[in-house]
Amino acid sequence: MISLHEEPALSQKASIHLDEKKAIGRVAASQVRNQEVIFLDSGSTIQFMIPYLIEHKNLLVITNSVDNASMLADYDIETFLPGGKLKSSTKALVGSTMVQTLETYHFDKCFLGTNGFSIESGYTTPDPEESSIKQLAIKQSNQTFILSDSSKYCQVSFSKFADLKDATLITNELPVKESVLLNKETKVMEVN
Image (cartoon, rainbow, N blue to C red; front, side, top):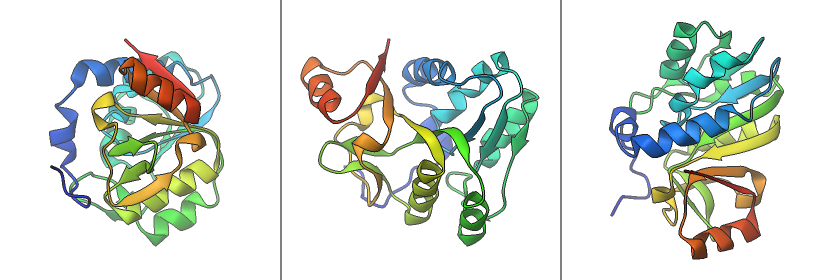
């Protein structure tokens, strides 16, 4: 069993459920429109969106992920990386400087990862600092998407950052019973 406050390294998370993450990333990127301003957080599934973003024109991407910023630069996508304290495990920028900067921005859409989601607990992550960045991105966005493979269903971490109703969930195919329950709480996009 995973500890409520344990945060696996990004390199560990990036190498599991690859087919599901690729499908989720493709569908997530299809929600983006030309000329939008979007926020991408540091979730491992978020990285699988980036290759599909080159299909869009005049995007501006804000991210708190050093790895994602580097990938976006490789694809020549206009990217802004605000400052903050760098977490070694997730390569995410967090802290008061990041919060102050994000408070001055507005996004058409934000795309966030999660360490777990459940009907009772909503979306959770082990680190309260990352949780505060996610909460703020949701507040500053017109529309929010959570990208998560279905293995994280009924997983709960230490810090809640959103209720299920606060975002559209993009996940791989769920068992029918779980799909019905989740669709009562929020919009769910299941990918194959």
